[in-house]
Image (tube, rainbow, N blue to C red; front, side, top):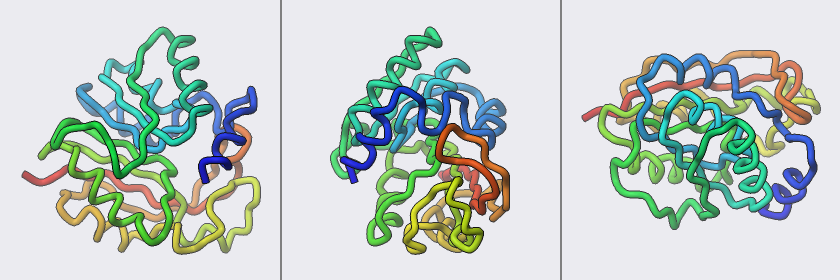
Length: 202
């Protein structure tokens, strides 16, 4: 998997563009800036946007090419982010370190994705917010190669899975929606996604 992402991010053009995800953009601007975590952040478009809003940004990924492009984008935009190369099972953060966490198209292997959500939630403060968007299980039926996404349906998401994985959150937004993506080279056209926003219960 690491090799796939290194190859994808090695190109000069940004795989998913330099602009932030639109759902994230709408949600994040409504929050008061604090500390925020971006798991599986790739080339950094969303983390850099958060830094521009005044957030203290932490991000990680397994791809050195993604890290390189993210740090270059931050420099270009005149902001700084903390971006490390870490495995999700060996993160250097503390319990309840973050006011918010953002998961944008963070598709993990089917056997561990729910466990990873629980693990990452450990780092979110009580009262902290999680913002999530990823492809739904119905995305495959659209057969849109330009939109990308995993081909394994078990790596895709349902509303019920998000309710389960974030059961200790007060949900303010949870919907499966068909949208038109326009994000760089690999996220384009009709797509089925699940979107979630929740606040961690005390």
